[in-house]
Length: 151
Image (cartoon, rainbow, N blue to C red; front, top):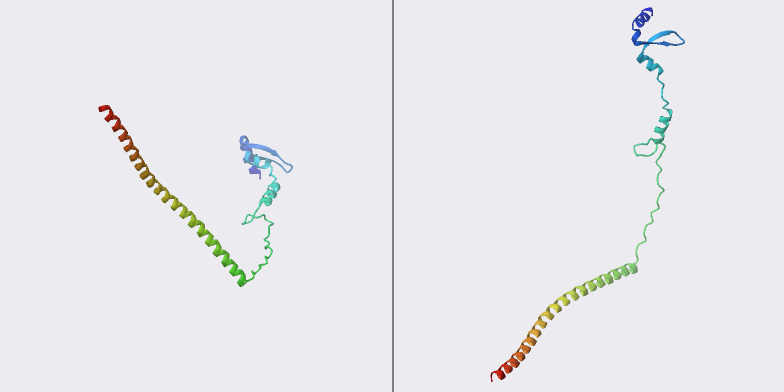
């Protein structure tokens, strides 16, 4: 140990004295930093990690599976012949009414379109006849006036 002390004394510029209750020794600055360093309190950090720890399902560590309450399955009662007939009749009436409404709407639209087209054709014919009759009257009146002027 005496050789170690001599070696340590040779490098005084890199060494710092450290006095301890056991003995006087010289240590490197790195060793001195390690001796002075305080151990952090990790107990608080561990408790925070444990409090937020979850399992593979993302549930808290203390979570346990609880089976759901059993659901009592109620078997439906079979329908009677009267109930089946009532359902069939209601479906028939619903289908009949739906078809009637669709047929009425389609027939109304078709009738309206045909009536409109027929009205256009008939109105054109009547307008043409009326126009020709009025034109003939006007021509007759004008001819009479010009004839009287020429004489």
